[in-house]
Image (cartoon, rainbow, N blue to C red; front, side):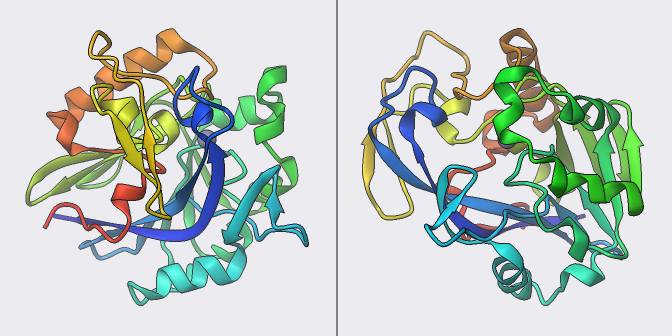
Amino acid sequence: MYRIIPLQVAEIMAPLGIVAMFGDMQKMLVAPVFVFYLDGGDKKILVDAGVGSPDSSGIVHGFPVIGGGEQGLRQALSRVGAEPEQIDILILTHLHFDHCAMLPLFRRARIILQEKEWQTAHNPVPVARAVYEHELFTVLERMNLVLVDGDCEIVPGVRTLFLPGHTQGMQGVAVETNRGTYVLAGDLLYSYYNLDPTITSLKDLRGNELTLTPRPDLPFFPPAVHIDLSAWYASCWKAVGVAGGREMVIPGHDPAVVEKTFGE
Ligand SMILES: [Zn+2]
């Protein structure tokens, strides 16, 4: 049985309109960038590989970022007493710039990625070009990369779930814990609002309360970044179904996830 420990590697600032499609693009919120440590097995397993460090104007890929880079990753991993070089298995949800930036540090890891994500990241649809940075992931060609096709058991108690929609090849991770099966949704769901559109507000990392438009008429509400909304909705139902309930699904960038541990 595993415990899921979200480790914050950076803060990223983004408009509310990215977290919720049609939302206010003038209202900014500060959100966490995570890697997730799966504790409890005999292998050190991590989900995702962090974001780069900001340039001299504090920007990564057009977004204001605090932390990140090698230092942000090392500090985050030190919370569980691990170093990137010790990670045995690295599961990449997808190849957007804030999920794969520190790959070269994971020298001995077996790296699990969907084949579809690998293919489409090299030739994304035009609107998605800006969120992929080739230099960050071409290093995978010289690493211990394992391309999987669909749902796949990685070790007993940990399996990948093909969850396209945010990207064409995104995967989540289903993790068995003492409290049942949790699903790490990656960026399929940025926040709990995407998972439960009856929510009326979101508190960011600075404690700012942002008002949301509740949509109780909809089962899920998409972020602005998606490649296929039909696939996105199907993936949401799949994630909730595998997890056995919405409360067991963990979104990828929600401030409420910081400092929590799931499954104990
Ligand atoms: Zn993403």
